[in-house]
Amino acid sequence: MPQDYGLENLAVPVAQEAIDALRGLIDTPRSEALRWIPDLFNGLAFEVYHELGSPKLEALNGWAIFNAMAPLIRAQVELHGL
Image (cartoon, rainbow, N blue to C red):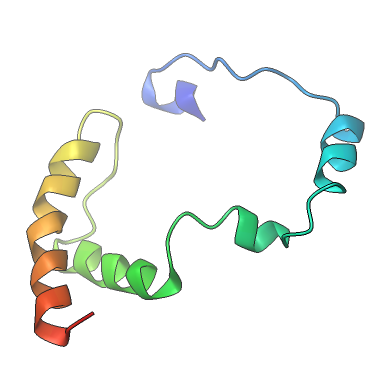
């Protein structure tokens, strides 16, 4: 939750019935609709994150971790022709 990181939670409460009704209008499976990245990239990013020592991810260091991961991911993509 945002407040766990010293941030303000600005979420707007929505009735579960409304969510269920809208979800019923979508043919795409929920797991696919909520997927942000392909499974292949997820596995690669997970490996690289662990190579970096699995640094604690916090709101103020997210971009630093991203910047450390990006060249390692790029190198793996080029090495394996992904």
